[in-house]
Length: 319
Image (cartoon, rainbow, N blue to C red):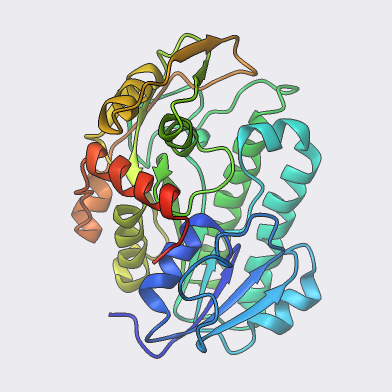
């Protein structure tokens, strides 16, 4: 159990960070370092919790980052530019925040002599167009230069290399996690599943870009958080990277839309539209390493996760 720690979270107002804070806030001091570009925190039940300190700032502000991190035991680096639409519109900012911001956060952690853990958030997109039961040792691959969507994968891959370098060169206790399509209560931005759910609840058309044959595995947020906490608690995780996902909840994008409509008894029509950009055709993880080292296993069925997320969408309050 993580207890009596000072935990510093970049991107702490975001979706996944908020679910992590929910698990840790009662027994630890939490510093949220975020520019609040996306804000899940404000509407959460613990937004005003006395164990939370909020610093509104960007990870590009190196001096403020160093100062704010002072006294921390654990750093969770979740701040990033993400979401395909945002990345395509702002590829330069994407690379600046994701690469320079990570470099700043790692260096601040080194200066502050972080001893507990440094969790670096990466992405499954480092595997390129196809990721079928990809292990952590599989070769990484990114798309062609000039295709804006791949700036996200490139920036995250660079951050992975840098995190591992800080472990090897400076003994900073880094761990990299690669989330596989995490969804659930509190999700904001451009996640396909939460968009499908919101539209299905209103019986509005659900739009699929492309032919709908893209295959994904879907991991409920509470399962992901369980894996993330194991990365913090388990000493064997240090210096490693882990795929964290649900290899059993696998569907095409079209199948996902159909499932959402079935679970929510929705009358929404599924409409196909031309693709907006290059896409990843197949994304299914191997979670054997996380299972063996961390004893991690996703347990939430997709239907159950959709129903829980829909309840949050209807009520609008995180608990």
